[in-house]
Amino acid sequence: MKNTLAYSAVLLTFALAACNKPEVVTPPAPIVVTVPAAPGPPGPAGAPGATGNTGNTGNTGNTGATGTTGDTGSTGATGDTGADGKRGKTGGDTLIIVPPANR
Image (cartoon, rainbow, N blue to C red; front, side, top):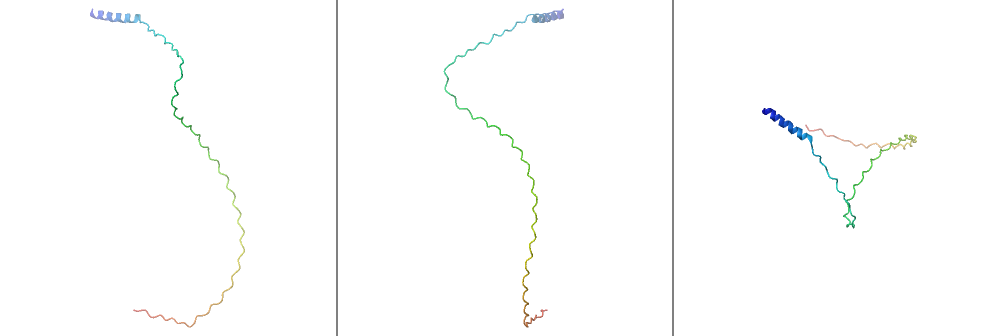
């Protein structure tokens, strides 16, 4: 009997809780009317803006063609041969004596 009474009480609680839930009504937001007034003093100057990003650098152009090699100049004329030198004089009767080495 105790179990039946406990089950009945729990069942009755759930049944009554599910029947009538009160509806929550939110009041409408109040209407705000702004009245224009005299302007105030000017505010301080703002910070300077950020500098913009510069664009990407363009591609380097193609290298120009290499010029052709110039012609080789002609060979110059052969120069004059110099005059023949005079024949040298003979030496006098100079005699060189080499002493014997010490032993």
